[in-house]
Length: 96
Image 1 (cartoon, rainbow, N blue to C red):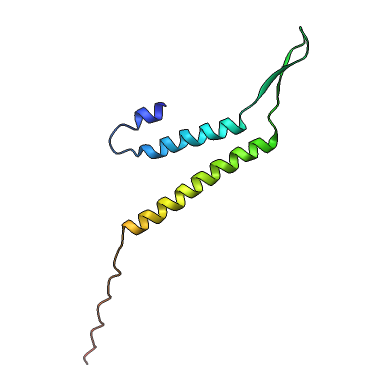
Image 2: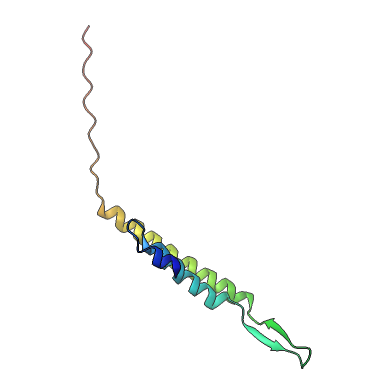
């Protein structure tokens, strides 16, 4: 959130900060620890019940989303900037 506020200064692209925030939230939702209390008092302990499959699912979703966005953005920027290839000048004949 601090980076989003700092990004309001001129010359900084906020989309990178927003993307990092969204990607972090998605990954944390799937891959963050799922704590449960185990045992009987006084021997209580926390155990992470998150399965490795869910961590891989979260990573795959984030990679897929950002991959699609990167390809789409790259494709649209390539279409927006159409540069004509410049013709090379004709070589001048050598006169002896």
